Image (tube, rainbow, N blue to C red; front, side, top):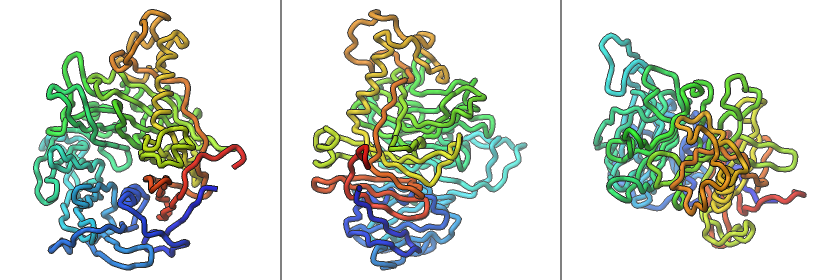
Length: 489
């Protein structure tokens, strides 16, 4: 059995005590919970600010032996959507409905709050503004993107109003508004997904630089959503596409024939080595009328040197235990393997591992049941399966790339004829756009019945690897040892 501890969120009685080694990583658990009225709590060490915005909320201390500090927004309607931590200063940024907060990491006191809504808005308005004949109404602004960009000393924030447009604020002083960027970037409704992160790109005219990688679920709300691609690489200055010429565009679109029906949920994304990755939940089939086929989880990969998304490739991600079929990714995290886990996975200590929590679907829908599986994949294993699927297309094993739902197919969706390409050293220089048929499958490290885990972070402590998981009921579960289950578990 994998050692497990459970700790109550604020307002609940703890079932078992939480150890003092909560670490900074726990902060990421809280933002993705279904916390309609749950406040945020953590334990850090840092200076206390001399002033704070008392109107933003209340800070309580020593609520229980587990909860050291607790920040409660002044209004329960300001539901938390995202959190970001500035690792240089320990400042904590919170993105909520109609609010942004900057907290001091040690005291949890709100240094600044920014009012972001409600705003007068309409789906018929462009990000640049509204025509006078369009009727507008007060609309809640749900935070969709919250990332810290150290290279531009800014905090990038996108909301659900104004077609998912973004604002930038000064890093370290959220009260200083740098710029409103009238560009449709994020999903423009409360429920459609948007996931963004900052990573390296190697195709800019400025040489090596950082960019915003973002995945956005298509919405048909308003007349301007065709401007928003499914995936994009955007510069950090004005959030325009990193490359946009007649022949090269740093974006990926779902074909217009399918995008209304084939909605992709972007759950997580990250950079490792020369690639960026996105984890998604999507229908098994992109064809209309195939809903009974249900949903699957997939991981996609793009080379950071690719300025046209030609290297885009997808494979299925599976997590199967004895008699289980957990098919819906809920969250994921990347961490460096400790010595014990590395030995178990057959990798080196410090190699990157992806921890993913899955839920079982309710019937053929993408609604999760209260049943969770935690699976572990080394990034080396992920890349090996991607390369295997690419080789299957290029060595003649497969005839078709099977990616008709993506715009801009390569070779009309056909794989190269056998022996026609020679020995390819770097597939980042080739046109791919392949939907792999061989999934990446592993067995769970943990199975939880009657529990829906909605968020996870993980880290290595000494020789061990430890995960913290947030549940839909507002509990933290600490997994003290991470190993895949064997067949008898």
